[in-house]
Length: 197
Length: 197
DNA sequence: CGTTGCATGTAAGGTGTTACATGATTAC
DNA sequence: GTAATCATGTAACACCTTACATGCAACG
Image (cartoon, rainbow over all chains, first blue to last red; front, side, top):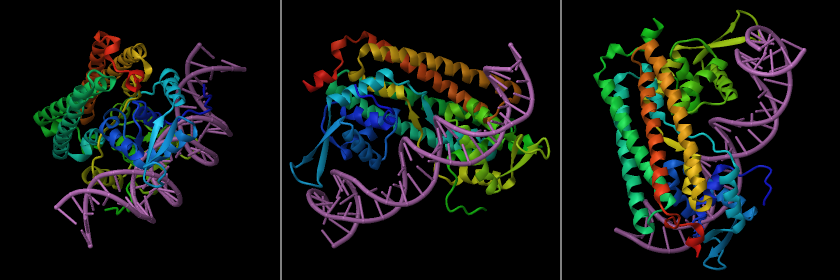
């Protein structure tokens, strides 16, 4: 239907996606929900970004707004997806090329620079990353349990299952890295000083 | 040492990190190398971005440039990290807070919206993502083999090992998702139409 | 009565991308 | 000779974040 010369940024479709589950939600709601869902496999936009996207989606007719309580300004403004919005979202899923997945992991970047950081620092970093991974596993597990209880099988549940597996692998990969590095005598690791010598 | 009111963007440290291995490299070299290393666990900046960062790093005194062949303009310009650059990098690793890891996966975003996409579309998407995962595993394996052969144990090798495990887990998670979804009768999945009914 | 949470939005600025411009060298 | 690769860089723009501004409601 809508011939868009340039499609929305992915954030736009993510917000539209959150609304595609059928509920009327405010910008504030959307932020909270994305922190508990999108965050694990995509990313959670800043609240100001969400407000901006909602404005754009409204202008495109993909969502409609309503004030709560009715007629009062500056209180709670909830959004609902329109049929055009669902069409646009379906069109994006169907026709837009799927961008390659990206992992941005600063901890790994620092491990990779171990010849600058030193073995002790790297080991500490990895240990703390394992902690972080455990927390993430707990968070995802929690989301998954709730989703399964209240909704039964769902696409969201499948994705959470995926995330749980992935987070677990992450933890194990760090644990193995730590074991390997621990057992390696310091001189076995090529340091910058050696490399430049 | 260097009191920076605002630190570099992470890209800057990534470029500095590529140079911290001690070789003299051009912007073009850096791009190619980052495509074969950083890409798997951080991300590979656009070539124009790399040129920009090199300029900034040079102004800060973290790298020095040299023309090749000597004295000829507009040919090949290689960069070398300075001691100040190593200090800045070490300072970043030591003192800057480690940002939470981010996974940006458009395929999962679409699976999550399966109630809009439909089961068939999701299954196709997952299958193609499995293919992508296999290619990634092959790429990382290749990098890892070369690194291990030529360098012996190294931090870069440890990170590649990590990436290989992670990529494998990714493949398995998609395979399991596909099996689960395949065995699920279509009506068991809550669709948008049902949700709104 | 002060902090936290709810709630919305604007403005400025940083980061990074695509598109463009340029030109040499190498391979077919 | 012409296409691909090597090689560098600028300009315009999209995207997103932080900081700021505002105000109500609930909790202690």
